[in-house]
Length: 412
Image 1 (spheres, rainbow, N blue to C red):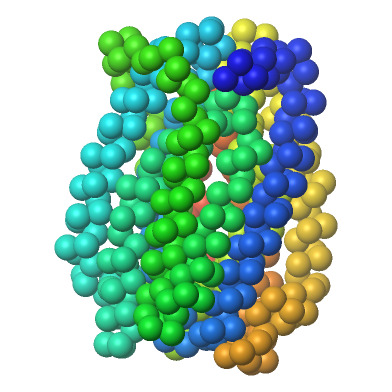
Image 2 (cartoon, helix red, strand yellow):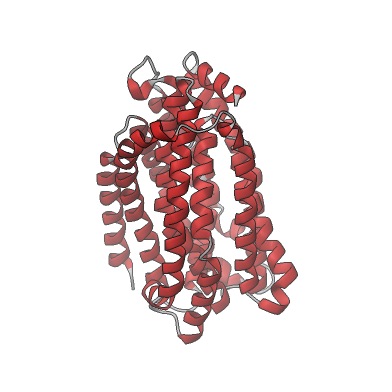
């Protein structure tokens, strides 16, 4: 924790250097993490191809991700400005109190959400995948019930990531994907013969639990001096004013992802899986922009920019330049190499050359979102550090509206 306080103090003198250093560290560590994610995706592709099982699994993972995206990012992003202010002032007990109250809330809310998800799953599955037949829907319901516990684990993990990011500790949290991928591959290898595609979901749950425990151990230093719960209650209002608009904005974007998969389910068997594999590749490339916008909010908060205490708000312009410098050529490269890329990563076992062609086409169509999403997330991360979350809500609404219009216009 002492090292974290020293890093926070250093931001005020050289914020852009700290941003570049944090981004490079995140990129290097996350690149290793993403390689394991690609290995897990390749394992799934080789084992199941573009089949009903793959459709159900990737729909389940995508649906869980969409359901968790809004509340988890809401928690992670909203806790950073408030806790960061206390840490900048040297008040660790108040920062710990805020985290303790939020932890209690996310456990309760996550528990309720898990129960609701288990009970309502048949209805949710039919709504999310209207094109699935009886077998596909049954598999989707079974997988979602296995994955339901990740609603709690994902929220706790997001809070712990926010705590570590507030302390400007970006390296170790970036390896989260390794634990999830190891869990998926391990579950498939050890239990695949007996449980089929369900083994992947069990492995994902075990991996999520393992990562959450590791993050909890890393964040334990915040509580060494105890937690000032009484003072933390005063932050409930500011936290909710940040969290709720942010959550609604992310929910709007997540709803678009669910809608995209629902439309894909209507276009034939295997198309949800093809879309899922293409999106997973885009997400791997998205680690570049993520490595830039993830540290932006904590660094702006630590530098004092959010409270106009001499912080260097030129960090935003610097971040936008980095995004354009890296993502424009990366997008062009991904479009040019789409078929060889998909072939090398996935074309083995049950994944055929025809599957490669279909997935590569979807990859090219989605690659154009890399630059736009990177600029969007950098701008919105900066807005949050200045306690402006309503602009994020409006921008997210416009973003998803244009996406829905295009999806409906291009649906055959």
